[in-house]
Length: 126
Image 1 (cartoon, rainbow, N blue to C red):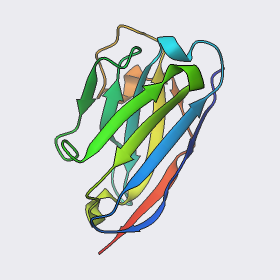
Image 2 (cartoon, one colour; image 1 turned 180 degrees about the vertical axis):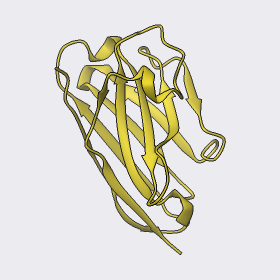
Image 3 (tube, rainbow, N blue to C red; image 1 turned 90 degrees about the horizontal axis):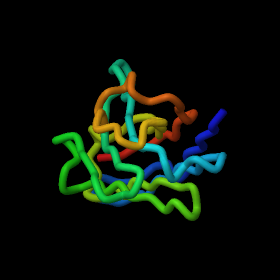
């Protein structure tokens, strides 16, 4: 069983930045496709960003393209989400997720992911 633990959430003013981290347990992290999703109050959980096992491919939701950057450090079993130019509409609980298929390109498909973290709250004030 893989455990994913997110950190780095908090309260930030609009226009500010935050960097989320997701630490994974286990030795197979470097083979996982990883993703970030978010869920705002009263909304369904939605895709934010995804990254291939090697980090060579990334994919973003249109709403965050150009503002958010996903990256990973396989030596540290960690995936990151650097968020800049934050907007109040970015307020949500952010979840990281792991897909055991290293060749997956279903970054935006919630059902493709096998493991989920507990989430970290990001609040952007106007």
